[in-house]
Amino acid sequence: MSETLKTSQIQKVVEILTSARMDKQVKLRFGYRRRDELAANIKASTVPEGDYRYAWLKETRDEIVKLLGEKGEDFNKKYPYDCISLQDFTDVLNSATLLVKARQT
Image (tube, rainbow, N blue to C red; front, side, top):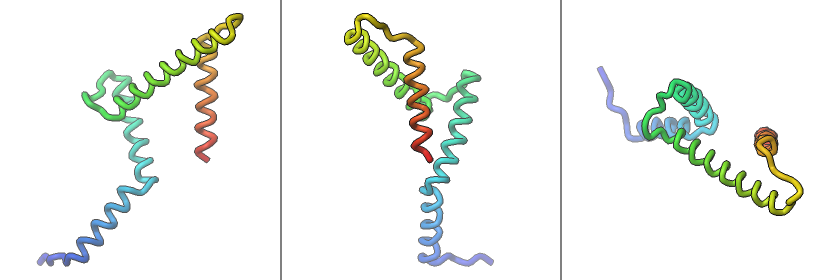
């Protein structure tokens, strides 16, 4: 026979489930799985229409590329005897990656 749950029991279950869903480590593991799935979809050219992570990735990438272009133009104007190259942009991105990784610990 099944018993009816009391309101307090239901509330406790909801609290536990909400806590688990909002836990940072749970969300990070979810994000890891989504990134892995998205990488596979990108490789197979099967990214689902409206994928929010893919949209965020493209939007953020485009903003970063635009900023790099602007900063490169600024550099070239300020130092007319020098010129920014693709390798300089790569150096900036690698340096930023190292900085982000260092701040995760």
